[in-house]
Amino acid sequence: MIRVAIVEDDREARESLRACLGWIAEKDRQQFRVSEFPSGAAFLGNYEPDYDLVFMDIEMPGMDGMETARALRKMDASVLLIFVTNMAQYAIAGYEVDGERIKEIQAVNAQRREAIANGMSLEEAMSRFPSVLKK
Image (tube, rainbow, N blue to C red):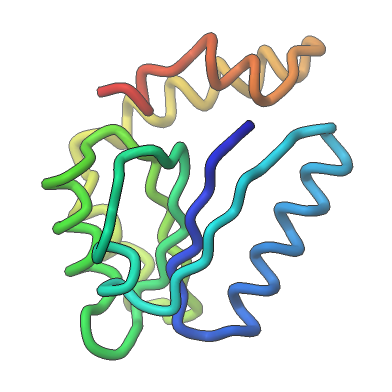
């Protein structure tokens, strides 16, 4: 089971991400436990480091995604963080939070892609090549 948090103020965007995860679950026979949060403050309020993956909107009212991500990294350095935005000017800004880990992420993802291409399940590949999640 892959534990996922969606931190997004737009309800339709949250539903769209959840639908994408549903499609992946069906296609790859994966199981996701998805929690949704309408704001960074709601996400961090009672945060426990038990997520494998966080989808984080960058532009949110109040505490934006960058501020939320910086606070998250102080509490949990190992969770995989994916920024979600439709604003081109923010696309590169997400690397400020995890910039030093980009090469490690790319290497581990390449190992995972190769393993999955050779028949390994996504969940098994994530277990076998966890360094990006367990740093």
